[in-house]
Length: 124
Image 1 (cartoon, rainbow, N blue to C red):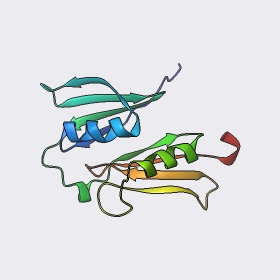
Image 2: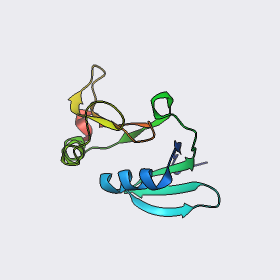
Image 3: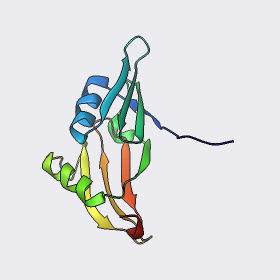
Image 4: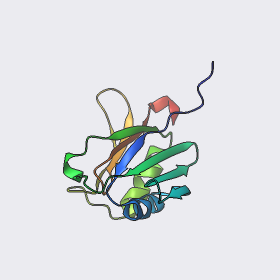
């Protein structure tokens, strides 16, 4: 048995707002299914699914995912160029070394989903 991939299904208080945010991050829209309140986005081998959750309070959202990304510095520099704030929602943190040995950057999208992206130094 072989696993191909695993994609998080994240809540979105507004699919259009979520789509615009992730378009800027570089994701492409694979499909939007308004009758079901569902959207699929992809960038390279990463895929994110979103389900409409109009009653979502972003500050109370505890959903997220981890993205393996060997080019953490490039991603971090791209996020910096988007002028995403470092506090509030949405927000991001630039590339940094973690105590567990990873080089990481992360962001919180407008719905409060937390996406951490990183690599071990030997991966980059």
